Length: 514
Image 1 (tube, rainbow, N blue to C red):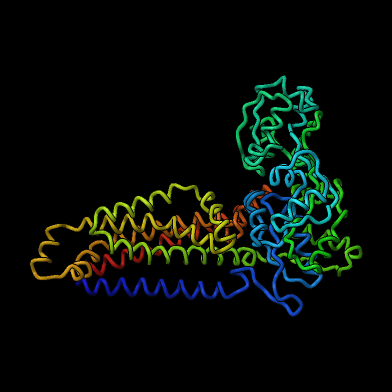
Image 2 (tube, helix red, strand yellow):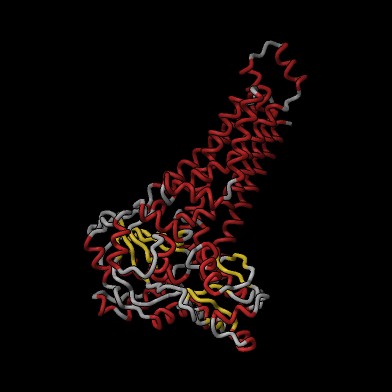
């Protein structure tokens, strides 16, 4: 097959890929699924609710979301944001309208306030960021140190002070707890604790503790897992932990009608009630959406809302929306990296210094941890689809650029000299010689970028971009293996499908070539 025909075949293949990608992206972008936008006659702009990535915060955010929906508002859920500061920065930047925070976290970790400030003092500080604190929901979910109940009885552990006598205990805490002043650093100093500590994802700690993989971890006092795994909470006998009252914090510009609905939650849920709601998820295995609906139905009269039935979505409906979002993120990012990566590679491959500099920059981008890069996007691009696509685009550049530049440079010099001898111009040499010979390596780079992007896109859930990663994050937070698999298996199958698709394309090109 001649070089020009091979280029024509490739051009048609890439054009078809681009057309399908753009049509899919356009369809997704124009739908409520893609950007979380919707409208009703009663509410033009949706109310955007955020949540942190642990079970209780999902549940509280869902209760607030369903309450607003039953009052006629449209709600955009941005659940599972990756940590306190991501949530707060998203609120500060107007990316979300409110989320549920805890007073101890607010005063100690976010505002760095000393003592036990009151609501007026806290609101004064929040006002500087265009934020306000609404009424407390009612319960105190304080930090605690949890150990196995059997071990507590065997060692006589009842108070945190008792840990001083056991430096050999395996202490494993959530990453956020290890960094906060109201977490391990301050706790170890107050109690003079000798343990060496390491970090773990909070949702995984309870199971590890119950299986005797670790000896103690940080807990939330209202967690349902405490009863599920028969864990004992040690008394904070020196009063280190401040109160952690659950409280919505919102943008100052929150519509008054929305604020009134949220204030209906004030004082409604005490410690026992919250433990019971969390146990319905952690112990009984119900979804947080179902538990939120049950709670609102039980208290429908108090909230002045209608009781509604909760219908479970089919497996396809549950996974389908997340799968489409995942495809959207990956397709747009990889398509952009193909256009930019190949375009720049074709322009610089013949200039060694420029090409090496470009490769070096792409390599540096690849060394930035995925979650860190996503978090760094928030101050500039906010949360959601846009920063996720930009991050995936940057990660997809290196394999495309490296393969393209290396292949274009590695064409047999003898063939290049022959082409020059028969009068081919540099542009004709590129079109008729270098590109056809480099095509297998270029396609391999695109193939690698696409598969990597599918895997990396699962982390986009931490900045509210959705995708299959959202199901994985929720599953991790709730220690729900089924939920994790609902996200992980489709992501793996999608990667395999892309791998097989590119393999078939490469075989077709090689067959036509030879």
